[in-house]
Length: 196
Image 1 (spheres, rainbow, N blue to C red):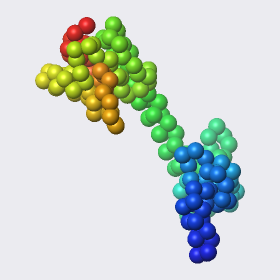
Image 2 (image 1 turned 60 degrees about the vertical axis):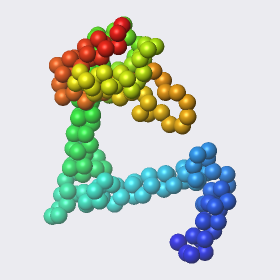
Image 3 (image 1 turned 180 degrees about the vertical axis):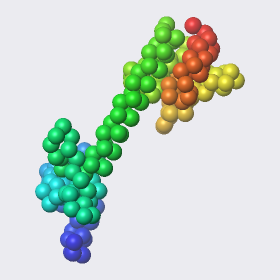
């Protein structure tokens, strides 16, 4: 990019305009919608061009059967545009992610069983729960009481920004304990300390 083009982009950006075309940027973004889409389409075109040239779009290794080349992935009997190593890494990552979500679901079910009557919010495959606390308790006080009994939770005060009171709540990590037995012990302590 020439110095003149860069200076023009800098002036547009300083004026609150899209640096590429001078139009109005998207809310909370630097670029306008059209230029953002054109850039993502450009990245997609470059990825397709690498695939068409016989190069893995992830690792840039040549795909083929010759010396120094990476074998193509043959998933369900048809060659894909990724090399075997990158495709296997992607499949392994997806398997691990699904296993973690299944484990999170088991932990959430355990929490729902133990904390059943308590008011809490969380996703069934999430890693945390937010426990609403009764009137006399605060998040910081509940955090201190749990720590004395060997359970780590975080009061809502740790997550509040700006001014105003923190909600009467505590965040419970479902994935912090290494196994279900320790999580169950901690949830029983939390249920007892919440006083319900």
